[in-house]
Each structure stands twice: as C-alpha cells, then as structure tokens.
Length: 196
Length: 124
Image (cartoon, rainbow over all chains, first blue to last red; front, side):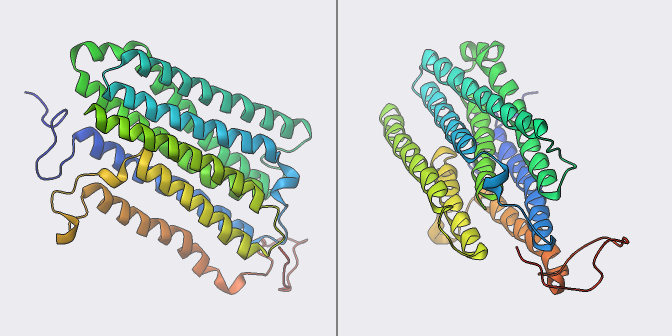
C-alpha cells in the first residue's frame, strides 16, 4: 500500500507529508533552543556581574562565521532553485558549496574553542562560558547533523533524481528548511553571546 | 515554472544582500554606548528583521498555501503551528523570569558560606 501525499499535496491542507513534518520538527527545535535562550536570560539577570562578550570572544571571527553561515543558507536555496529548474549539475555545485561553507564554519568554531581552552576558559570556568559553550555546542551539533544529511543528498541520495524528481526536490526543500533554521538560530545567538 | 523560479532567484539575491548589510549593522550598532536594555532591544530588532527575511523568503513562509484565503480567516496549518509555537516560546522565556521578578537586580546564589546573604543591588 502506498503512503499518500508524499509527492501530491493533500487537498485540505495544501501540504505534503514532508513539508508538514519538517515544519513541526522545526517548531520543536524552537522550543529546544528557546529553553536555552530562556536559561541565558535568567542566568544573566541573576548574576552579580556578567562579562562583556566582545572582551571574552573574538567578534571579527564571529562576524566572519555569521557571514559564512548566511552564505551557506544562500547557496542552499540556490541548490533548491536549481532542482526546480531541472538543473542537477547546478544543484550539485550549490550543495557542495553549502557543505563547504558549513565545514568552514566548523573550522573557525574549532579555532575559537581551541583558543578559549588554551587560555584556560572551559565550560566550568564561569556561568557565561558555560552558557556560551552549551549553546554554541548544541548549535554545532546541529550543523554536523545537517552536513551529514546534505552530504548524503549530494552523494548517494541524489540517485532518486533519476526515478522521482519531485520527491527528491521535496527532500531538498526539507533539508533546506532545516538548514535555514540552523542559520536562524545563529542569527540570534551571535549578537546575544558576542555583542551584548 | 521557470519564470517563477527566475523571479525567486532575483529575490534571493536581494535578500542575501540585505542580510549582509544587516549583519554589518548588527556589529556596528554594538559599538554604540547605550544602556543594556536598549542595546538588547536594538540587537533583537535587527536579529528579528534578519530572521523574518530568512523565514519569509528562504523558507518560503509567505507562500505557504492557505486552503481558505486569508480574507476568510485562513492562516494555514504551518503558520498556525508556528503561531502556537511562538506563544509557547514567549511562555518559556517569560515564565521563569516572572518567578524570579522580585529578585532581579539582586544576587542570586546558592546557599554557601561565601555567598552574600544580604540582598544588595547588582550592577550589570
């Protein structure tokens, strides 16, 4: 028995299963990061003192990483648009760029973390560092997950293009929605941790 | 279909440029010498603007189909779910604060010998 509404939209909602599914998943992720943002607000308001983010963290590196991640969101949406225009080569190019930029983000994050460890700043050193490492760490895990999924779609997953173009395009749309969400979290995380 | 996508691509480029400008603005504004609440407000407004651009244009939230048109009260399943999520997000941000609103500006410490026991105003 075939599962309905994988490729066809359900008439009453206008949605396919994947679209509803991914948006509901993103809603749950909003609560996950929301809980951490809430913790940050409470910890900061209750603390006797709080360091100036720019004095602990490297703002130029953070800004560069913000540009890199936004860039990866742009290449992701162009990958999806390529599939909509029946251009597999374009999709592969832009998806490759998305993965490349994501890995660059992780490398820069690695340098930032390493620098903190070298000067003795660990998650247990202060409340500020605890919330910094927790939030950026969880965000980094989300990036790694996204990279794995995107790499699958760039590699073995792209075989579906030969048998069911619409379903593959829908999958890339879902992957794109997840990726934009990861970018969205960073758009809020960067000013909160680095600039405020 | 192709024109539709071409139009989208033009929009993506404009949104990408706007995001770049807003990122620069985010950092530039952080150098202004304003009070913490004002700095937080400005930062959140800029971040929310960037976020809305990503949500509306990259995530196509503006185009989500509404089986019932907006004029007749249709907001669609996805936007409806997100509104409920937004409500709960506000709850999760503000409920813990409301529980401690009498202590804002004072030390919040676990009972231990070195902690100040007198409530004194904290500077942050």
